[in-house]
Image 1: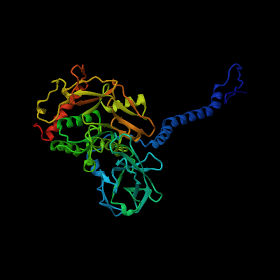
Image 2: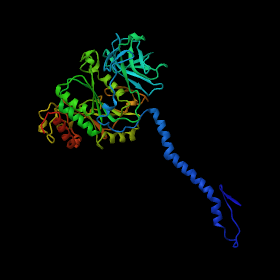
Image 3: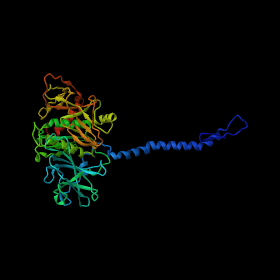
Image 4: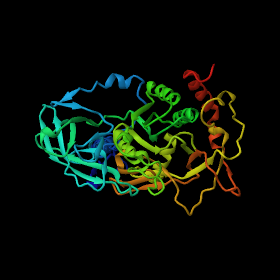
Amino acid sequence: MFSKGKCEVKYELLDNASESNPSSIKRSCLPKICTIILVLVFILMYILVILPKIREEISKQYRYPKPVGPKPKNHEAATKSPLPSKVCNAEVKNGPLIKVGSFRTYVIGSYMDHRYEPRQITSVAIAYRFEDVPYHCMMCCDGGNISSTRAMHSIHSDHYNFDYGTADITCEFSPDCYSPTHVAITSSDQAGSITSFQPIGNLVIPKSFPFTFTVCISVMYNYSKVLNLIQAMEMFKLLGVQRVAIYKSSCDSDTQKVLDYYVKMGFVELIPWTVEDYIKVSMGWQKDKSPGELHYHGQVPALNDCVHRYMYQSHYVALQDLDELILPLNVRTWTELLLELEKMHGTEVGFEFENNVFPFTAKAQMNYEQKSWNSIEGTNVLKYVDRIPVNPYVFNNIKVIVNPRLVLEATVHGLLKTVNGHSTVRVNHDIARLYHSKDIEYPSDTHLIRDERLWEYAEDLIPAVSKVLQDCGFIKT
C-alpha cells in the first residue's frame, strides 16, 4: 500500500502482473474528490454570496445608502404629513430662523446626526460671536415628556470678521429620551423657557436615497434673470441633477412664477431665507467695503443647513451658485463623471472644480441665437463661449461636489472640516471645470480662450428652455 497525499491508491495483482485495476483506484478516490469539490463549492459561495453581505454590513457604519434616482412627482405629497400645531404644550415652528430667548442666536434647522454613537442632534444656527451663551436642548419625546440636556456649540471660522457667524449647537440624548421628535434651543433648562419647538429632521436613515445629486443654491436675492434661471435648471437636469434647493431672500414676480413651476414638478425645494428680518446682512464678503453684521446675505449658514437637510436624502450635494455649471469634458453627466472621479480618488473625499469665467462683455456668438428669447429678462449663456485665462497665482473660486455625510463644516469655496480629516481634491481641468457666466469687465489685452463645451448640450437645452418659457406664459407656442 502506498499513499499519495490523503488519497490512498491501492493496487491489486492481476493475472497479468504488469496491469493495475483502474476501477479500484476510482472507487477509493471518489469520496475524497467529492469532499474537495464540496469544499471548493463552499469557498465559491462564500466569495460570491456571504462575503458581499459581510461587506454590506460593515459599510452600514458609514450610513451611506445607495441612491435610487429621483422620486415620483407626487412622492413628497404622499409621504409628508402636516406638522402638528403643538407638541409638549408648545407651538411648533419650522424656521427657517427661530430666535433663542433673549440671546442674539437664530436657529435655522435641527437635524439628527447618525454619524455619531450615540446619535446627537445638530442645530445649524447664526450666532453673535461675542456672546457667551449657556445653551440648553429641550427635547420633546415620543411620550410627550420634556427632557433637558446642556448643549455644546462652536462657531465656524469663516465669519470674515463680521459680528455674526455660522454656529453648530449640538445636543446629546438623555437616558429618558431616546427618541425625541422636536427640539427647542433655549437659554435655560426650565420648561417655562420654551417658546416653540422645531421638528428634528433626518430622524430615520432611509434604506435608499431619493436623490443622486442635489444642488444647494445660496442665496437668491433681488433676482430677476428669468432666462438664466431656466437655463440653469434645465442644464442641471441634463447633467443628472434631481433636486435643487434654493434659499430665497427676494425675487421679482416673473422669477417667482418660474420657481413655482419647478416646485410644483418636485424639482426645486424653496427655503424662505428671512435672515434680513433679524440681522443686517452685508452685500459682500469684505466688511470694510460692504458693512453689515453677517457675511454676504448669510450664504455660509444657508450652505451648511443645506448639507444637513440633504445629508440622508442625496448621495452627493453640489454647493454652487445659479450662474455656475460644473461641466464634465469627457463624459456627459455627473453620474458618469463621479464614477470616473471615485475610481481615481476614492469615495472619502470631496471634489473641487476650477473656476473659469465666461464674461458677458465678450463678443457674442450668434450660433445659437433664439429670437423668441430676446424679450426675456436675462442673458443667453450659449452666446458667450470665450473664457478668461485662469491666473495660477491668485485664489481660484472653486466650487465642490461632495458626499454630505463627510461634511462637518462647509464654506463658500470648499470645506472647513470633514469627519475623516480629508479635504477636497482638485479635479484636473481636462476632466471637468466650473463654467461661470457673468457680467464682468476684463483688461482689453486679455487673450480669451474659446471653449465651446456648452454648445454640445445646445440641441437638448434650447427646446427644454423654450418649453418652460411657453408653459409659464412668457412666449407663445
